[in-house]
Image (cartoon, rainbow, N blue to C red):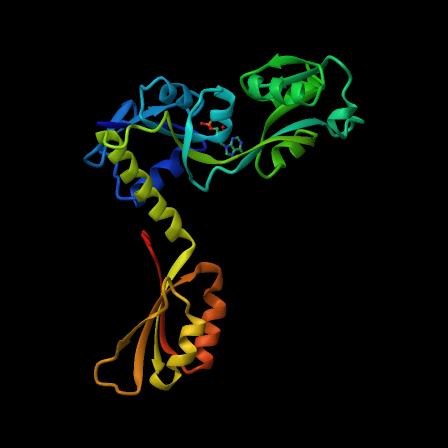
Amino acid sequence: MYRIALPNKGRLAAGARELLRRAGLELEDRDDRALQAALGNDFQALFLRSRDIPEFVADGAADAGITGRDMVAESDRRLQVLLELDYGRCRLVVAAREDSDIDSITDLDEGTRVATSFPHLTREFFAAAGQPIRLVPVSGAAEIAPHLGVAEVIVDLVSTGSTLKINGLKEVATVLESSAVLVSRADFPENHARARRQRELVAALESVLRARDKRYLMANLPRRALDEVAAILPGMSGPTIVDVADSTDLVAAHAVVDRREIYRVIARLKAIGASGILVTKIERLMP
Ligand code: AMP
C-alpha cells in the first residue's frame, strides 16, 4: 500500500484534502481522531503535523507527503519535490520592530538575537550573509519577542503581512518563498509497484492543477465564420467543430480556454455572431 502523509490540521490540511478529492481520491469516513484512513482503493493516508511530515517521509514511514516547502527546507532531509501544489503560499522573512532603525540585515549588530521556530534555516541564512547572530528558539508567537526585549528581530512566516503590521513589525529581508509541495523520499526503481502508484498519484494531482486555470467553452456559430473561429479559440489543439442537428448554417465550437481569457474570447465570439455560449469548469485535464 502506498502511504501519503497529510497535514492533520492547520493551514495546509484542508487544501490537501480538497486537492486529493478532486483527483478522485476520497478519504474514507473515519473518526476525526483516527491517525490513518484509506484514500481511494490504492492509497493510505497518514495524518501528521506538517512540521513532522518531511521526517516521516525521509525515514520511509510514508512514501510521500504534502507539506510546506519551508518545512522541507527546515528539516534538512533530502527529499524530492514531485509537484508544486499551488496553495499555502507564504514567505519566511526577517522582521524587526517598526520603530527600530533596522532596515536591512546589514544594520544588525554582531550577536543580534533572532527569535524563530525555524532554527536551521535562520542559522543558514545569517551564516551565508556573514552575520553572526544568537538564536532564540521559540515554538510559535515569535512576533511578541522584539517587544518583550527577548530578541531584536524574528524570522517568521508571512503571507499578507497583516500579522506583522498588527504586531508593530516590519519586514527586513526574505529568507525563503514557500507553498505546499508533494514530496517523496527518492525515486523508486522504475518497475517497483510503488513507482507506478507514485506516477498515478502525480498524474492525477497534475490533472487537477492544470484544470484549475482552464474553462470549457461551447458556442454556436455561423458556419461562414469558421475561419475566424480558429484564431479566437486556440483550444488544446484547435477547437472541436461539430454540426448542429437541423441546421446547415450553424456549427458548434468547443474549446478549452484559459480562465483569464474567457471575457475577451466571449466578446470576440459575439462579434462574429456566436450564440448559446456556455462556459463550464473542468474537473481534470490530461493532455
Ligand atoms: P500548520 O502549522 O499546520 O498550520 O502549517 C503551517 C504551514 O502552513 C507553514 O509551514 C507554511 O508552509 C504554511 N503556511 C501558508 N501560509 C501561512 C501563513 N500565512 N502563516 C503560516 N504558515 C503558512
